[in-house]
Each structure stands twice: as structure tokens, then as C-alpha cells.
Amino acid sequence: MAPVTAQTQASTGPDAHDDLVVHMADVGVRRGTNDLLKEVNWSVELDERWVILGSNGAGKTTLLRLAGAELHPTTGVVHVLGERMGRVDVFELRTRIGFATAALGGRVPPAEKVLDVVVSAGYAVLGRWREEYDQLDTGRAAELLKAMGIAALADREFGTLSEGERKRTLIARALMTDPELLLLDEPAAGLDLGGREDLVARLSELALDPDAPATALVTHHVEEIPPGFTHLLLLSDGGVVAQGLIDDVLTSENLSATFGQELELTRSGDRYFARRRG
Ligand SMILES: Nc1ncnc2c1ncn2[C@@H]1O[C@H](COP(=O)(O)OP(=O)(O)OP(=O)(O)O)[C@@H](O)[C@H]1O
Image 1 (cartoon, helix red, strand yellow):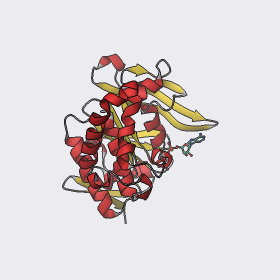
Image 2 (cartoon, rainbow, N blue to C red; image 1 turned 90 degrees about the vertical axis):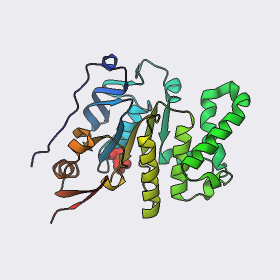
Image 3 (cartoon, rainbow, N blue to C red; image 1 turned 135 degrees about the vertical axis):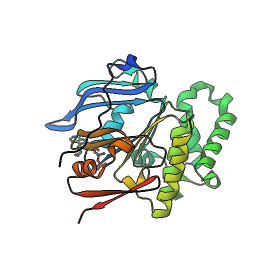
């Protein structure tokens, strides 16, 4: 069965639209003889919240790392926040991007206090003004922990947190610098059902906040798509299967093409569920 694609119109360039946060044109990433990504065209606008869905090894994290200015494309052109990758100081650019990954969690010293994990994200930006802004920083970090439902954990050591509490801490950290682009790599991975549902609800609140940054969230599961997310990119074997508005793109046919088996998608209210046919 041919997948029903709903490709968004490829923009003519990053200057074509003021609200363009990410713009990738014919992008490929190659390692040895492996094409991690191939011929990817993708644009993210200011008010868009994207879900990137695909199977293990499809290239989701690679795509997110390109958007996070952590990786250069082998072919094609990537613009992030109006800057062309390869012609910009990526360290400067990364201060404008909030990136929450499990890998980052692994680098946090276990004895670090939760509030400090969040507040220290701001130091890279504030630099030598750190002393002056200390109280403001602490207040903002405490607010973000509250918004993520873990205000009571501010003084706990990061190493003593549950998986779900760590994920929420890292999302609060990613938001600390008031980023223009928020990237979340599998935020619900490893969470139990209650933890997942709670996180999905919080991400939904964030997605519906008009002041929230443009967001891209990577997941393996349609059940983890938070209501309020607007767009979907389906990746399979390094290539885009379909992309566009979630309502247009998220179909049983496209999901089956993405995961290489007959899947049936059902919708209940503003949530999605998928299972194998037959
Ligand atoms: N440096 C590398 N050299 C060769 N292959 C690599 C390299 N880095 C990643 N890959 C491969 O590229 C593919 C895409 O990796 P990526 O992490 O982007 O996938 P993913 O969709 O995020 O996977 P998962 O859902 O399992 O996290 C994988 O098959 C991976 O093994």
C-alpha cells in the first residue's frame, strides 16, 4: 500500500519566511558507507510543535542533533535560527537552543542539586554577569521546577531522582535560558504509565502556551504525542516517509510504511494509539 504523503512545501530558503527556526534543504548525513539521513527537507516555524516519529535507528536523534547545531550535514544545507551551519559559531548558537537528552542526564554529576542542574544552564549565557543575576536565576529555575511538578525536589541530589524526575529536571534545564528552539529527545522513554501520562500532560501545556519556543520532540510511540503538538515528521531508514500537519500525516497507512508492518491507528479524543493489524 502506498503511503499517503503530505509533504510540506519546501521553502525556497531561510530568508523566505521570518518565522523559520529550522530549515534543512536536501540534507544527508553519512558515516562510512551508512546514510544516517538522506535527502531530508524540513522546516520548522516559530509557532510549530513537531513530533519526529520513527523506529529504532531511523535517524531521529541525528536529525535532532542537526537542528541542535551539534552536527554538520555531509550534504545539503542546514539553517538554525537564521544561521547557516558551517558559517557560524556553534557555541554561541547553542545558547539559544534548549536540548534535553538522556545523554546529557548521564553527564550530570550525581551529587549535583536539582536546582543547580537547572540554574547552571543559564551560566553559559550569562557568563560574567552570573553574580548579579544569581537571585533571578534561582527564582526562574524554581518556577520551572514548579511548572514541571517537581518543586519539592529542588534540594535533592540529581543522582537520587527517579527516571521520570530526571527527565523533568532536564526539560526544566532546557527551558532555563528561554530558548528560541526546544529539542526533546525521547522525553518519555523509560517512564512508567503514570509518569508518561503526567509528562505528556505537561508537554501538552507547554505546546499550547503561545509564548513557548518552537519545539521538536522525538519519540517511538504515537501514545506519547502530547495534545497541542501541531506537526509530524515520519522517518524510516534515514528518509522522510511523510511530514506535515499531524491530522494529515498520522494515518494507519503512513504509520505502516514507517514501521514496515501493518499497523492500525486509532484516535481517542486528542490522543493516538497504534497496534498491529490482525
Ligand atoms: N558514527 C556513526 N557511524 C555509523 N553509524 C552510525 C553512527 N552514529 C549513528 N549511526 C547509525 O545511524 C542510525 C541512526 O541513528 P540515530 O541515533 O539517529 O537513530 P534513532 O532514530 O534516534 O534511533 P533510536 O530510536 O534507536 O534512538 C543508526 O542505525 C545508528 O546505528
